[in-house]
Image 1: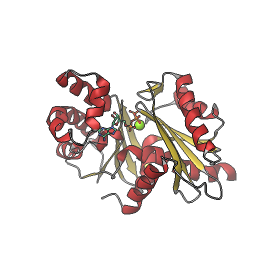
Image 2: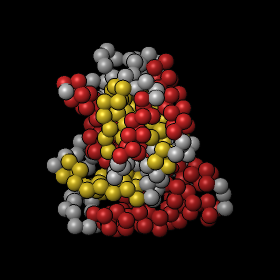
Image 3: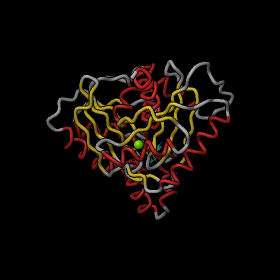
Image 4: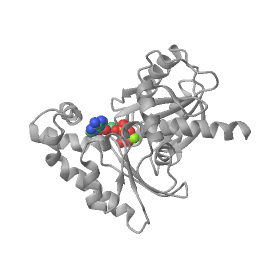
Length: 282
Ligand SMILES: Nc1ncnc2c1ncn2[C@@H]1O[C@H](COP(=O)(O)OP(=O)(O)OP(=O)(O)O)[C@@H](O)[C@H]1O
Ligand SMILES: [Mg+2]
């Protein structure tokens, strides 16, 4: 199933809202989602209809790694700046949700909520990342594969519920390492080169083995599950050509939104909207 236009439009609206340029705070309550990722910390804000109205994206500077908060104070500081900037633009943020990678349990899942508490956001709920992504994509069945900076989350969704999840330590960092080794450049330059559309067709053959490895990990996890479509999200899924490798290895039709990087953070804000109503009616 292809991604529908309204999902792509909502993601594009969130991308536009990130600049905070001339965004008018809407009437009514706002709902915030925070994605503490290995590569980026992203805050998304939606209105009561789920329309994106504000947001911020910052490099996470190693404060989060592979689904664990390594530098709690560092993560809080980045989020504090983001929230201050958005509040400073006139948006009154209160209710918020955080997400944790699939399989995260106990104290680590709670730590994600504590980061939000520290910046005076009221945590109405925690959600796992693939369920957040599926809310944006508007799907109730399929496999959501979130290839981020450090990890790849694999989830099978059936009838709107997560039927299986796994999180594997493979992501954009591994692509950067291969490029850095080949061109004899530092990792951060490799990361920039990877995002340059002018260089992507030249580097695709070099990094195809990394994508194949990711795809074989995904295939292993999906074995035995009835999956109709594989939905690719996460920043690493932006790279043109990754979807073809995924299709070849998994023998599944692959759908990718126009901008896979922003799906999970936006989904966390949508889950905040949904969970707020349950929270207040409880
Ligand atoms: N246009 C692009 N092409 C290829 N890779 C990209 C592009 N844009 C971003 N990336 C990569 O996407 C990764 C970040 O994606 P994302 O924000 O989904 O990860 P994260 O949530 O921070 O990490 P994780 O989920 O692993 O904790 C980085 O490795 C970055 O280099
Ligand atoms: Mg992520």
